[in-house]
Amino acid sequence: MSMLAEFKTFAMRGNVVDMAVGIIIGGAFGKIVSSVVADVIMPPLGILIGGVNFTNLSFTIREAAGDAAAVTLNYGKFIQSVVDFIIIAFAIFMLVKVMNTLKKKEEEVPAPPPPATEVLLAEIRDLLKQK
Image (tube, rainbow, N blue to C red):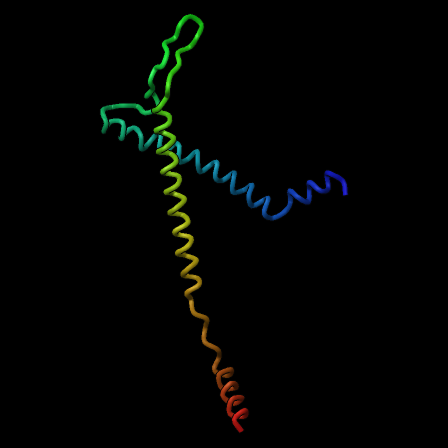
């Protein structure tokens, strides 16, 4: 089998395609959540704590000198990333929780009772066994 044919077989497996779709959707979802955090949640939070914009928070370790740029510790970006992670983790938790609830409801649905003819035939069978 040629290398190209092996690659085609590998790439067309159901699991690989499903994983690729999941990664693409996950990346898009991550961008949406990052936008929600940066554009919706962080501005009011910044106002509540005194009008601070988290992304610009930094500590200068060494000032710029000549051609060398300043060395800064950008802890505001870190705070932004932590908030992004918490929101993404919570959103995924809620999604999994909803999916588990729906799955549990599907499992709890009782099987429909057998038709009356099957019940009667089972009773006749049991009576014949007793004789």
